[in-house]
Image (cartoon, rainbow, N blue to C red; front, side):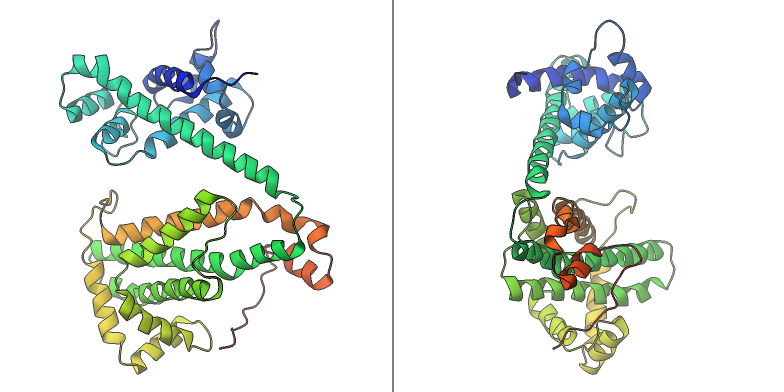
Length: 371
């Protein structure tokens, strides 16, 4: 089968998106475009990324995969004015999510500043083309992951290399992911309780302080042991891990020269427990300053919590913890089958390590690191 040139594919996806958009979020309405004498979404159906997302091999399953793909592609657009108009048009923007396709078009047209006739005649196609480009980007990423998956699963690599990968994820990436998600959870709780006027919101800042320092400590520990080289199965994965970790620390409450003092206190703990950390920070005379600084930072957030501002420092931290955690999970999926083969578990000690890794009910008790 000869692959369609990408320029032609982009043109045809742009045209087919007009039909998908009119059908809205209804997979049943999109399915109607696939039935009958002519398949009106032949370009969509030819995309491997649509086939990969189709859970049940029926026209309705294909329609559902198409709806989800279009929604994800539109959500990936940024805050450029035309990209915002495309999000309004495809009803992924909070201002049009509850509107029907015709009303969403009206909102996008009003945002564009041109008359409806001009919008329908030229602008709307430009907006669909932006979404079509994102669909092709999702296809490219899917192809890349498929290539990496084929290379990684059962790849002929030395056992030492496989265990190095495992140590990076087990001893560093997953620890940072855990700290990041815990930071996000406690920050969210503090913001919600503050919005609702509950005085207990300030108590959650104690945990926010702990997880902020814990993430910074784990990132610094990774740098000390491995240097600033984020070693992941894909190049985009390496870049995303590096960027997300950098942004979490860049936007948090503390400058580097101060959080380094808190990291030093953390490094002296016999066990990584929040109450021991609080005692140590109080003993060092840093508790009042650290918590007041954190409280000032949190109160900078004046967002509608259902629709956070793009540039809010607090929500930038939370969005980047999401990105970091999702990337860790996605990248590890590409190599986890290495550790399910006998080839990497020849030694009984290694067998116990790799065959039971992240197995429910098989968690290992924590052993404090020797300082």
